[in-house]
Image (cartoon, rainbow, N blue to C red; front, side, top):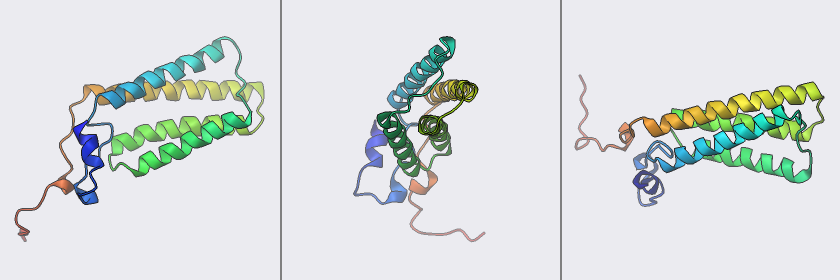
Length: 154
């Protein structure tokens, strides 16, 4: 949690904030992994029961749109490539849901979309677990102050 707190300290310039939202914590990657596993199970249960149609009501469309916008903001808040990759996986999945909820699709297209969604959720879960088991990275090199402003011109 200290790295998350450092990210939101407003008395530091942007370059001194940590670039990591997930890397410095075990809670958020665990939450992401559990959420991905639940959504993978949900996608699998839809496939197993042959109920592949996506909900097309206004609330579902709005929910998908809000998730896509929220994740786009999250991507803009981190400079960590690994976290951006995870958020991109999430955005792809919610954008897929938004597209399927917004436009009518054939049974075959809906089943294929569910399979892609299942694969993306599994990938997201595996990648989230990676954040838990890997060591917490050191602060960004940009966050380290230079040595008295002296430059080496070698």
